[in-house]
Image (cartoon, rainbow, N blue to C red):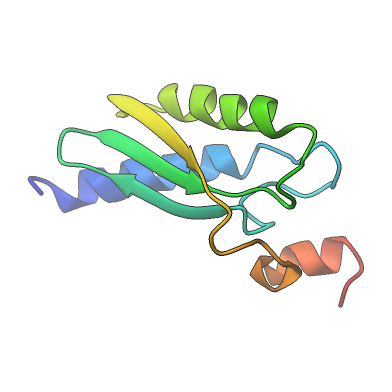
Length: 107
């Protein structure tokens, strides 16, 4: 990588944007919920986000993935973003941040 700080800054901006996207059924952002498995920034500033949903039959699957794709593509420094949806490993509440667990009254 040409400038590691530049890639870290892009990744940081992406995480900030992902932290502003909320699961419509749960009042917690998708990053704190643990729905984001990977954020990979390549040398040419292309981004691949690997994410999951709380359930495979999630009624907002298409719109949530589309929103993530749209918002990440708008991040300064991103050349092109791609979102990959996976259910391996399946999401469970252990993937949630402590903040999310507190917000939902689970601890």
